[in-house]
Amino acid sequence: MSAAKTVSSGPRKREQNLEDAYLFFNEIGIIAQLSSNQFSRALPYGLNQSQFSVLNWFVRVDSEATPGRLANAFQVTKGAMTNTLAKLTEKGFISIAPDPHSGRRKIVRLTTAGARARDEAVAASFPLLSDFLASFDKQRIEEALPLLREVRQYLDALRETR
Image 1 (cartoon, rainbow, N blue to C red):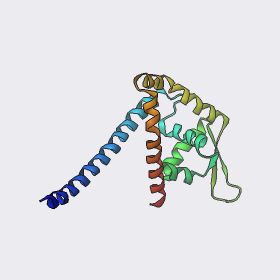
Image 2: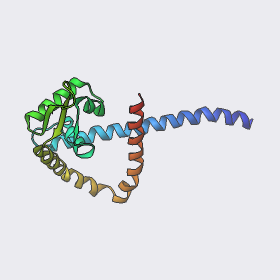
Image 3: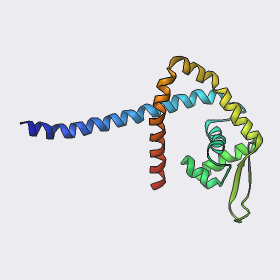
Image 4: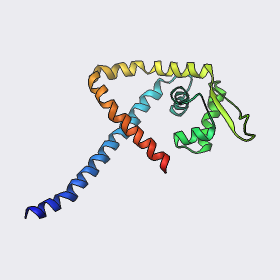
């Protein structure tokens, strides 16, 4: 009897684990949507979330990139990235120049104005973040960060293999 109980609880436990994993990512998705919406409202210079994300990528990741590399990093089509880059170029926040090593490729770089716009966008989020910190204990946030980073790194690595 106990063996049958163990066997039947195995699939149920797996189903519960899958449901918990689904709920985990569902919460992250909802948080991303809600926080992006709030953050987008605070962005200066008519920036949208996609444009800010590109500016932020240059500060976080690398000082230059090809449009294809950026499209891959953001998991969007080259056309979508080209559109975002065109709008950032119009604003003077990035520069696009021919790659000296390739006749076809372009190199995208963040301009001084783009770095300043990114910093101003981050500063514009401070009132939202201040309200957030008034509602959540700093220690709990710090405790959650390692798990969130680990999940992001896992998903980044998974993206690279597919």
